[in-house]
Image 1 (cartoon, rainbow, N blue to C red):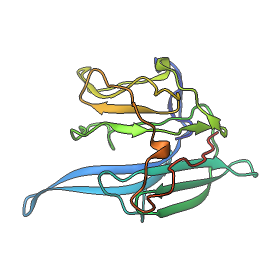
Image 2: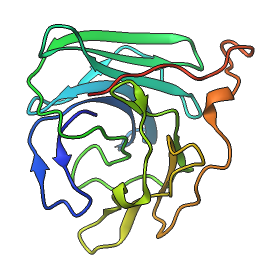
Image 3: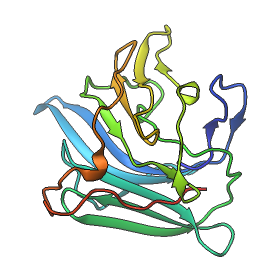
Image 4: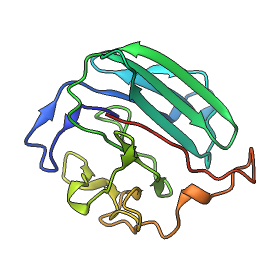
Length: 200
């Protein structure tokens, strides 16, 4: 996402602009049919609610998200690609941003909802302003519940300092040991996963 939320690791500075995109997993209970898991993709321009988009999402799929400002200030293109299934959503929007932050996050869809227990989420090949982000451990933010218990904990950056793991319900999280940049895809087993991304 661009802008929004906490500007510093201690969350002493905040920003009320946010343009973001990603995927979502919801566990839904229906008295007639019991519990089911639903997957979706979306984009969001704060303060408006998230907009669900037509893009297939399955567990284990690899995604590439790109949010960049075009030559006209305030004109943005949001692109979310399911690399595993070779499907893409693109949307151009008008939005005023402070450009305060670039963020890669795992969070609950609403404040009160808990996370489902999940395998570590792997973020990789992250860029901002067209260059590798050079992540540092001091920039990480841990999500906690109302009692202060960890709900999502980021790892230290990987060897390239452009990726990390995020673990649910864990006080610590191991850093990635492999890069997704060269991971083969189901949709094209010979194509490397490294793609360019610009964030501002």
